[in-house]
Length: 529
Image (cartoon, rainbow, N blue to C red; front, side, top):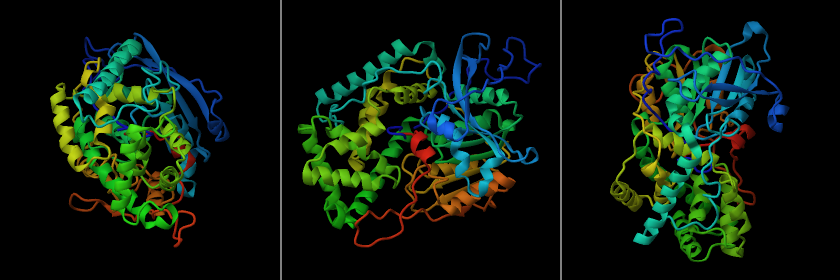
């Protein structure tokens, strides 16, 4: 799931010839490992990176690592260098924001958000994964796919169902035409080898790694295939490797339905501000009433029932933006104000830009074979919709191009972190995008890892956002390498209180507000939809 900013993809057994022997000892008929040229660093185009003192460059890598001498593509890379004396230098910290399909260049500035100046000992390295953002080539299939007033998500008639099936298969066909050879080399394992190329180009014996959302899956696969190359590892919003990817989306649907009800309860608590209902059930009923009305007559001719659903999805990812969405909800209901709805929708679905969605599909649809019979999809999603109507069919259609994806699918990697020396896992226990069982599964598969959980927290990948209980432990780990003591059993090793829910301006009772997420995360995180 990657809608607004929020993605994920997964596995892929290494293609023949991709299992590398050490340099100089390549087996017969096995290509030698690719040795990249150093990155030529220069000024960054982005103003926020410039202000952070970042430098940017391009790294040429093989399209196909089984043929390292063949066609090349280019990865956009950024870095903010360490500022401590050389004897205190801790190496490069490679980052991935998730998606899949999220641009990671901006994450090079994340080091400044680590408490106690602990980030200053690292080079913070962001990159746009293959096919994404400023990397070349960048995927695009249908830039207007997320235009306004699309068909209603609910396939309540054969005609509605066929309309979405046609849209989804048409998108896959467009990607086949525009994606070229890149579509066959967009698996998670391809990006893992790109990480290896970045490591080599940086001249690092080992990488430190910080991954959010789908980036945690990337980290788990990297730790399986190259465990000796990992040093310090932080993974926040942990993907369940057992669910890749069809089941993962169905599990998300149930979790998002729970979280949107938490949002509705919050709106009702502040009925003095929003006047949308005094109970969560009343707000929820009004939400679905408006959805039905918008299907018949879109707000401003642009926000129909599907856009209405999408613009509230972010409320299920966490508390940032709750007030903005509640105000837009109220403004529409009470005064017919539709422009704020358009603004929120467009902020998550940039008009004329489908790059993130195209890359999301390219990874998820080819990492593993999705069910190829639509009857399976129909049955599973109607069963799920019966208990979780908020997002189920929206999510189904978001992924439906995988039914006819043109690239050959791979097989899931059997994730095994037994040889990774340590990792810090973080998960809010009501995270909807990457439900909590994923963190527990990663803790089992990475026996030297420690897990921080936040019971009752709904935020997805929210570390370094002002929660001292979490952020201080990240800083300690990055400074000393010491992890929280691992407890017996299969639960978490440390629990932290989640940040409090926000109090809207003008509320009768003013309480503590949730600190705003660092700008680098607001701008750059592309979460798994």
